[in-house]
Length: 167
Image (cartoon, rainbow, N blue to C red; front, side, top):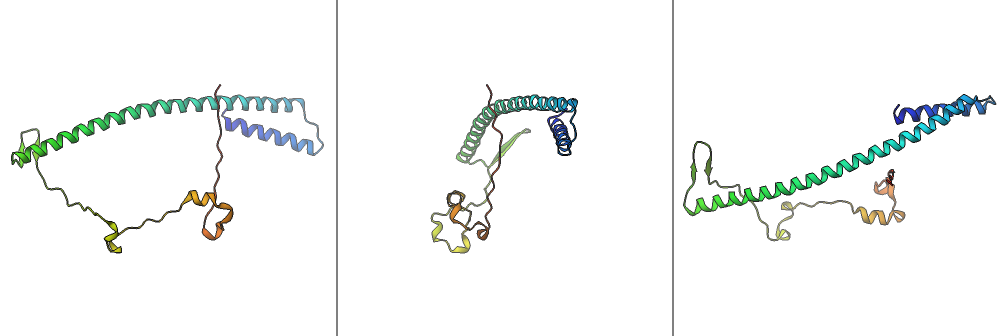
């Protein structure tokens, strides 16, 4: 059975025992033993799920390390490719060559789209500027007690998490 199934069955068994006790009915020894066994099964299963979860985290860490190595290799290859592309452009311009090639590859010098460089954004009229407004969540968090959250359209969310320690 899954952890969820064991939990459901244990909850149902405990509710049944609770109802019997509330109605002054006798609870059989078998029902109590079944509930205790389900509780043991739940704890065993939860521990095994925790171990499985830890294994998944370790595997994820190994993959993260491999991804990091691959990203570093990709960065080196991208840097080399960029260097050789710039070298080709420079050398072709130096020799006034606009296009060269063979049956496999063609190299040609092209004009790139225009790009805009703005030295001082403050000198631009407002219609040529973009303004991004975003909340200062740190300041809001530090002043929660003094703010009217409903009026400001702020809601506070606090999640829970499980802490698993190995060893």
